[in-house]
Each structure stands twice: as structure tokens, then as C-alpha cells.
Length: 488
Ligand code: UDP
Image (tube, rainbow, N blue to C red; front, side, top):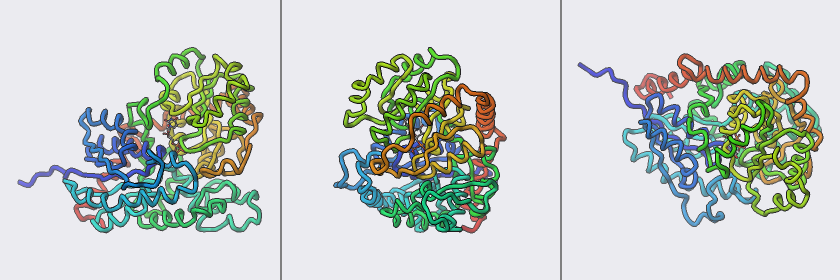
């Protein structure tokens, strides 16, 4: 009698080299493995270090995940240790970095060929544009991972298709995004790189991502249906129904302190400090892994926090030149906020901090992972988008979900261009937003909405929840595809 046991599904995962892309991909590896899939996740050695603790702990609990390392071909022509976007020292090296990454195509192809059992599909970041050629060569579907949500994807596609942004003469003039379930306005200056004239220097790179995207078989999204159902449906329409929302993926990773880089502070020290504050009283500030502030803009943020008179945890990027530390001691900021300010200079254990009950608000740059993590923590947000999809995400948080307050940033500051802009957000706006979210009338309703959303986020991942069903549907779909029941 023939065995009815389903075949072992094998997914080949290739994340893009950037914390905001590799962290969720490692979470997705865990989610897939929790549903019985064998996962091979391929990245470079320094990026592997970032996710190894999470993958090791999953493997210890008997999940089938192989973490495979491929070295960038030497000499790279990049500074020592530069294997990830946030460590690229200047904007002029973005193109070179991508060229170095593209040299992985051949070793990646060989690696794919050596896999046993043969992978049933490739799930890869849209920025690894050449992955589609490997998928085509070996006749497996390429599922695209696009590190953002459905609202952002639909906004982007509707602006791109309609070219509505080209109809306004001035970059700061608002236009309405067509064919949206809500009235959504942006200005040209807020748009992500693929639509923003300021990013012309890498226009061709954006074009190649857009072209590759068209060839993806389907899309895996770190979102959940209850968060943005109307936009999930819109996105489905443009992708022939092959959109699988399987998030929030961070909920699958139980190693909270081991996410991304090793934190520069002891997690217990953070918790002890947070324990000393009342519930929902502390501001957590983190503007992601890639954005950089000029010293002038950073000091405005510092004064905004100081003048709010609220306790705060501030995760800022490593102070490589020492100018921030120097300013903080010379100005007396550190002394004046001693006791109520906890400054982390380098990688922070974001999920540990966000999940602490004393956190009352998250001041975020609206990176999609941070947005999802803030939603899962049930905290209101103060939004300060910088670039990429972040202005889209701000609209979702503030206007649609109504769980945030904007600091009023009006212009995107693309990666590596901060020096051109000076101060865009003043201390008063930061102070006002904090006071509004933590202390003013109406703050309670916002908190309640944020908490309800967190409950929905958790439910979506439980047995019977939409994301749990979607992950099963995805695996079933790929299984049937492998057995020849669908046409690619
Ligand atoms: N992150 C962290 N500690 C930090 C900075 C960032 O753990 O000090 C994590 C954060 O939790 C999130 C990711 O890094 O998972 C950043 O992704 P996001 O999409 O929010 O922003 P990006 O860094 O890509 O701009």
C-alpha cells in the first residue's frame, strides 16, 4: 500500500544583508520549521552570527533548520567587516556593495544544486534580484519577501502606476494616492527611493528590483489580516491571490534578547532599570539600525526628551567618532537627565524593552519591523519616519490605526544623506508628542486601541488564527505545486 505521508517540504531562504531584512527572515525560518518544513537559510558569516543564537535555540528544540554560510568573494573592496547595509560607510558605496553581493550568485547556485532533498521553493528578499535566475534555472517558484506591509505595498504600487506624484509641480505639494480605501496624501519629498527624485543616483538599482519583483511567484508578508485587511485584499488583487500574510513573525522567536546583533547592555540591567518606573510611563526611543542623525538633529531629540520630563530609554547608534558622548558630557545633558534617562549606545535588546510593562510609548522611525514589534507590544507610537517605506508606515499607524502621534517630519532623508538636511524636527515637536501620548486627554483611548491590536496580533498566530492558517496554506500550496497541481 502506498504511504500517505506528505513529502518533506524544503524551503531555501535567502535574506538581504541588513538587520531589518535578515531578522524577520530568521523568524520566518523558525515559523516554517515549526510547521514541519526543512529550512536552509543562507547568508554571509557576519550576518550568520546575528541570527545564530535564535536558530541554534530552534534547532535545539528539534526544528529542522540549516544555517549555511557563503563568504563574499575577496577582495571585496569594502571596509573590513562590511557585510551589511548599515555598515556601508558612505552612500557612494551602495552600488559597489550590491555588486559584491551579486557575486554570490554562482556559489549560491552550486549550493542550491547540492541540496538534499531538492528544495521545493526559494523564499528570498526582493533585493537579491538575481535569485530569480536561480529559481528559473532549477524550475522552482521564487517567493518574494519584501520586508514591508500591505498598506505600504499598495500605496507604492498605486503611486507608481498612476504617476500621480508627477502631476504636482512642487516637491512639498500634497497629492492624493488614487484607488485607496482611505483618503491618503503624501508629498513627493516623502516618497521612498524608487519614486523620490532625490534618489536618482541609484535609480537603476531601484528599477532592477522593480523588474525582478514582477517575476516573483508570490509574496510572503510579515503582517496579519486584522491589521490591514482592506489592503491585504487590494494587494492580493495585484498579485493574483498569491500573498501570504504570516506575521507578526517576531512572535515566533522566543529568544527575545538574541535578535540581530548582540546587545551592548545587559538585558537584566535594562529590566532592573525599567522595573523602577511605574507602568506605561517610559518613552522608548529607537530609530532603527540604518538611519543616522546629524549631531544638530540628535541634540534636538535630546532636548525634546529632557523637556518632556518623562523617563526614557534611548537606543542610539554606536558613537564611532565620539562626538555624541563629548556633546553629552560637555552640555551637561547626561548629568541633567541622570536617573531618568537610560542611554544605550549601540545595539539594544528591543523586544525585551518593548515588552516591559513600564514602556508607555515607542518613539520610532517606523521601520516595518519596529512598527510590527510596537504593535505586538501594545504600545502607542510616536512616529518619526526617515526614508524608504517609513512615511507609508507612519500613515498606517497615525491615520488608519489611530495609535500614534507624528513628530511632523515632512521630508525623507535617504540613507547617507543626513548632512544635506540639517534639523528637520524641533525639540518642541518631540516634547509635545510625548506629552500628548503619555499624559493628555485622549491618551487613554489611544492606549486601549494599541492594546486591542496587540491581542489581535497574538490571536492571528494561534491555532485557527489568520496567520497560522496562511502559513499552512502556503506550505500546502507549495506542496501541491511540487506535485504538479498548479502551473507556475
Ligand atoms: N533592532 C534592535 N536593536 C536596535 C536596533 C534595531 O533589536 O538597537 C531591531 C528591531 O527590533 C527590528 C530591526 O532591528 O527588528 C530593525 O528593523 P526595522 O524594519 O524596524 O528598521 P531598519 O533598521 O530596517 O530601518
